[in-house]
Image 1 (cartoon, rainbow, N blue to C red):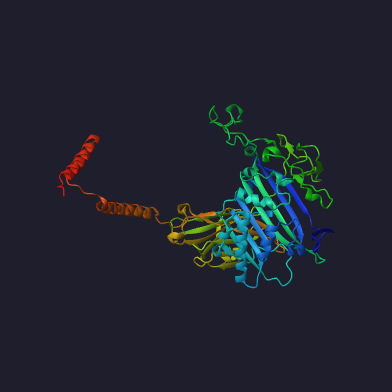
Image 2: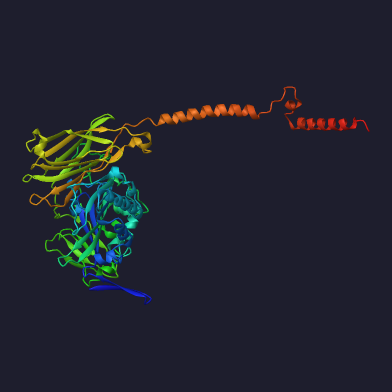
Length: 594
């Protein structure tokens, strides 16, 4: 039993009872991927007792986030920052079964305790605005048009019991650019704040140069059978780094072409010559070190991980047992019995570095392939109407796939469900158009209201084994007011990716998630150059009119025979002044005396 005591000059003594499970853990998992890529998964998890959380006695839990959750009556929170695209055909299944991956940009969903839906939305607005300031993001723009209430797409992971009236709210910002300003608050929430442990590897230049990266924060309550409850926060960072690009020094970030004599070309190609080369596939695995990939080694281990007195395996590497791996002194290696993973216990004071030399790949760690591949595109032509096409491919030759398809569309993108068509292509290559009822087992549709809420669509689908299902429906593009267009209106409008939840065939409780890529919708856009031309023409006319009138009012008109007109030079002006002075003197002399 761990206890922390706080005394205020003998006035009062507050004793915060902490559960034995109150701890902090961190881990880094490295896995080489095909195509000279490296998957790095960082995970940080800490617990806090529910009683201490309610009294605002925070130990490992970040106070800044805890006070926001208490103020907004949020019982469970899931926040995602994601950039890039996961190549599931080359890299296999997503890390964490896709649950910690978010849509492109920012994605947020939470369960809020409120008496009514209106109160829940008020707390939701307070939550998004507070998180916007905490993470330096634009989550305050998640208004009513970007907020939905999914019915079956998400389920709470925490233990929620009692009289709480929970309301699920979900919002996305597909156009948000994730950058270093979002990583800095993320690091400040960690106990070691990037100064020690695996978090010391974080560098914004390396993280946001990755081919794909995702930052996630999950907060949920966990209760034991004895009735003791914890508030758990789990922070994760997953990234896919290009080894060759990451090894470039920071002072020379521009890639240089490989000299011709160092190229490995295929001489069997008919077009092979001194200036044309078809590169051969690399048979050896690329060599790398942590210092080359992240620019620094691990600064020891976070001392807070030793509070429970048990040494933890902080760094794990998924490589075959015959792969040569070297480490710096002071680390303890523990090999997995399966022979595809090895973990390391870091030293308290020594820096840790991994060295993998370049060598020929004898065996490979098998990559687990995904159970479903999805693709979503906008079809059609013109600025008024179009269509949406979603393609689902089941690579399994034995089992069918049941899943939930969740789509949140903006209000200016109006779908017509009566045009929904389903086409199935089997392993025989024959395309068959089936009734929608044979493919879709359930549907939930909430139509949009202009400028108030977007369209919410949830479908329960089933794809047969070794088949491809294509869904197509028509959409209509609305015309916005000219004040509603962004400055880059001709670029298009971002449409949030769709969320796919794979269902288990037995109990429909699996938490495997997929997300499609985002879309760029082109709307009817007025010619914004016309107002510019009108402004220029009007300004020109006003300048000419005002200038002419002002010139007539302030200009001094002098007769043509005025001597001043002939006084162009300095000598002439001096002569004119002398003449004027002489006339004045003569005038005074000619006056009669009294």
